Image 1 (spheres, rainbow, N blue to C red):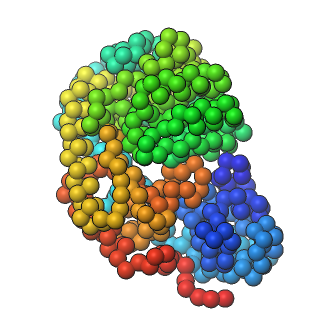
Image 2 (image 1 turned 135 degrees about the horizontal axis):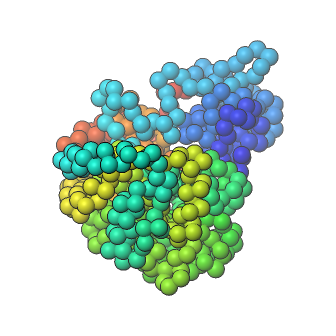
Image 3 (image 1 turned 30 degrees about the vertical axis):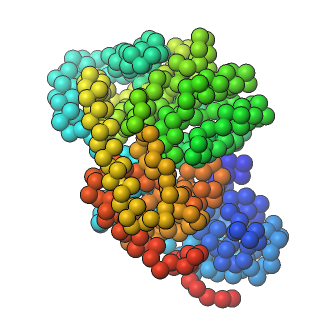
Length: 489
């Protein structure tokens, strides 16, 4: 599992080489005891190292890291004192979390308690009136479906037809048999990875990218090859070179208002990438969950429409209603060839026989209302993007970002690699933020970035920016971490 950069509890014991491969080295390149303790702590909170794993013996880790055994002993002492490890005589030292802490991968799902402003979830509220109307329509239809067993592995025919019609209207002719309805876009991606990928296979992914997608790839033991997405977007030459050099089984792309940068891939560039992927036999998995969130530009046509005649056979598109309507719906889909949809459905029924009929009936009703819902959503996001930007400019003028043409987030440049530590300080000031490292293919990258969504009511951002500024106020050039006690061995 070291290749996948994640270690799970099934491994029980970490070897020195495994742990070393999961740690982010300090800027000076050599670990001191405090730097080593901090690196282990960050790997725990980042989800790279699981809880209740036995850490390698001090002598073994010292040899792998080429440091003194005293350095490892001091680091383990710090971890135990701060609650990130515990020891049993004769059994070794095991990973742990102190009371009140949670891994970053779970921290974005608050329990609703307290007064914390959550800037970690890029998820809007639902359209209340439209949801109520759609639910009433679905409730009226439900008795008709109750006369049958209720299993629809491919999805309700009416919903498959509605999704196919929307693709066709947007410029990509699609038949209902090319649509598989899933329990959200995340299940759609998991099905595709299970169908086309195996442990050890290479998968190309943008860097940064959507954290839950990266976790799904790592969880299957796939080897992720990163290609950068910068302020200027994608470098087609680099992507083409990565495809030809590594010939990955899959390539996962978010071309429309990329998460987290908000960039939009020009369709000519998409055509070049599709051509390059076809030459290497790579399946393109295109995440289009944010396609409707076009704030400053026309909504783009489906990526597969740019591939040209016959070019879409190795393109699998993923979408959902989570961003355009509401994440609580848990309705997504795959758009692919009818053959691929059949294969994915066979995989789907081994874990999930069918989605909820009621949810799908609500989705059918919402699809009939989708245009006005999206129009209102886009207008709302424009205002909230402006409010967030203005609040950050007032309270944190040293931060920099590019205004994205769509999507739901600002990708903030902090100017220094302190995002993980700032997130910990910010939480104590009542605001939850997600550091850029969570979106990096390689642990420790994008430490100078924060992803901040503009999906909350406008008035929230002034308070949030004030709290973030308070978290920074008086902090030294390099943050000290109050979770690790200040002492010298």
